[in-house]
Length: 98
Image 1 (cartoon, rainbow, N blue to C red):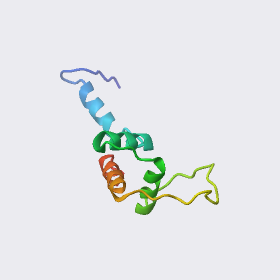
Image 2 (image 1 turned 180 degrees about the vertical axis):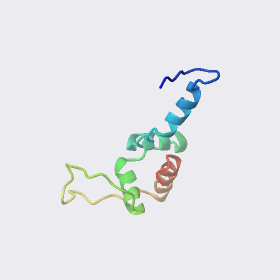
Image 3 (image 1 turned 90 degrees about the horizontal axis):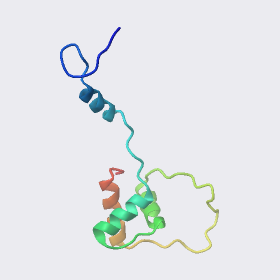
């Protein structure tokens, strides 16, 4: 079978191949750094990664196993303010995590 690429009759257009290839590409992985940058840019304040993790945990979203996770915390976990919780939820919606 002979296949020719390009424009014209009996040729396979490259533009359509590129469009179909984009459909099969995996979605990029959303990192905590990306979420932090989005919140700082939109809301003007910084959010600690622990706050992002707590909001994800409260929403029941999947969490990755941390190999260096400890059994007991040395200090009690601090909870984010309502403003920061809403900012994290907005960022998760923006990145289509929720």
